[in-house]
Image 1 (cartoon, rainbow, N blue to C red):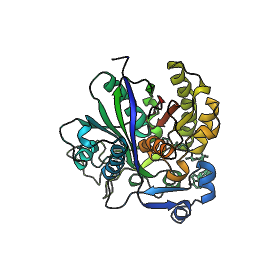
Image 2: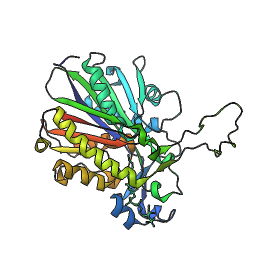
Image 3: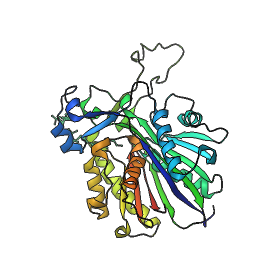
Image 4: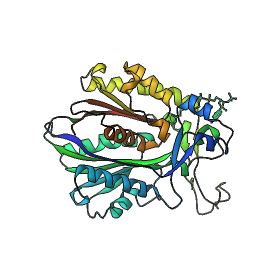
Length: 336
Ligand SMILES: CC(C)(COP(=O)(O)OP(=O)(O)OC[C@H]1O[C@@H](n2cnc3c(N)ncnc32)[C@H](O)[C@@H]1OP(=O)(O)O)[C@@H](O)C(=O)NCCC(=O)NCCS
């Protein structure tokens, strides 16, 4: 690992599907209300993927914008990684589909599955590989079509999720700044609290799909123990923000922006409080996007970047909590 090398974010992009579903519209489908959703989650609306779109389409659009922002083409890229929980297919990877759609060929492309923590895990992974000298420029994308895997009859979960994609172009160089460090965790003893079963669970050649209780579409639906997930998210995110700061020898008051995974405004507020940060230092998109899983951190990054909120030299703390449970954080000195 080259201590003198640093991984920088040099381009950002995003894509949100055109169709917007308001809480009002949702309340005509399930027994809920705009008031309940806003009060308990902070969500006002979510974007919904079009019938003829796939996760790879959202990812490709976000990646195109990130490449343009970096002033590069796909030919300048050495590796492409898609963090996703909602791949186009079981295989091949969504990353290989995105590589093809962008007109790239030859360089490695693969998916990362760490659910809502996928982008934070991906940034940690790529920072390590890039500083080890494997790649100079990487496209890292978080892309999801979560509304394809929600149970639209379950008001406890269907109000929470949305679709979208965010992308960054990473470049390694000897310039100071960029990714300062990452912390990753997983505790599989909580795996049952937030899950979507595989469409073909443990199939043997002698089982039929009907025997396994799989409907014609074979779709996996999200199941969640909301309260328990909430409590653990608040507790573990409160710990991990201090852990990353200690690892990088940075004090909490030096952090300029908290860029959190966007699941519930109350989780964002609790994490900001544990950091001792005012809410005006927190990038909030959950009201507009709902929970877009691995896309939510890069979507939030892109939104604040496009609004002109980040200044060169500022410190950004990225964090996420996910099914698994898998959680983590990255500390980034903005260098764009
Ligand atoms: C899902 C979540 C918003 C529920 O909020 P909550 O305050 O914990 O609410 P509860 O689950 O305790 O439910 C309270 C009541 O609201 C009801 N309720 C649940 N969803 C509802 C909805 N969409 N509309 C109206 N009422 C609803 C419940 O049925 C329950 O009613 P009861 O008391 O009569 O049984 C919250 O637990 C949460 O955000 N959890 C974490 C989610 C998360 O972060 N997931 C992804 C992690 S990556």
